[in-house]
Length: 263
Image 1 (cartoon, rainbow, N blue to C red):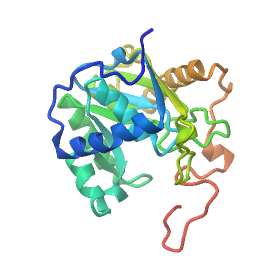
Image 2: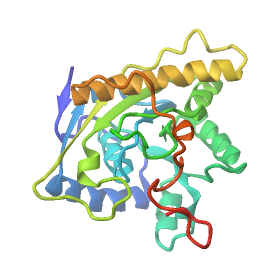
Image 3: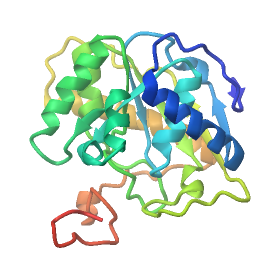
């Protein structure tokens, strides 16, 4: 097991563009001075080639912190990103130049994001996916039921799925809050796993059964990494927001506003 604490471990071998340069110049020193991070087994992140990086989602800050982890290991991640960000002044130019992939969740337009993600993988890019689709609604923060997008991408392209578990980012910025806890500095920990074994499913027709098998393996791998970081046993049954009557998108403690948007 290799543990790294904020040391650049692999040279970036792809052009990062002005957006990445700007974000790194602002975000990296901010995170270095206000938070603590621990990276475990980061060498398992492929140095090149298409790969699906699948992670649990516990805070609105973790796309930045996980993006930083990948950046310091030589990869520029392309996240599937809420399409609303592509309409925000200034932000839209950053996410476009950084080649993020817009996705309209819970709509038919999500298929366009899937096609773009597959094209990115075929081109050798690193695509970041939160299989849960949103910040976990599990009352104790464990990974909840996963969606099949990451599995489908891997099975269609043959690219490896690299699971990453994280814990602690929710203490830096609690879910659905805007005020971070910067002092005293909180520690966020990340552990990278071996590629999820999908060899027996590759080449099979991509049926619902195959997709659910692959998705379950991905979620098991992520959950095991989170359990290692927490030093606890995960729940015997993965939380299902639909079965629990909890909204899957947005803050579960708020209702839609007058324009139909979720808070």
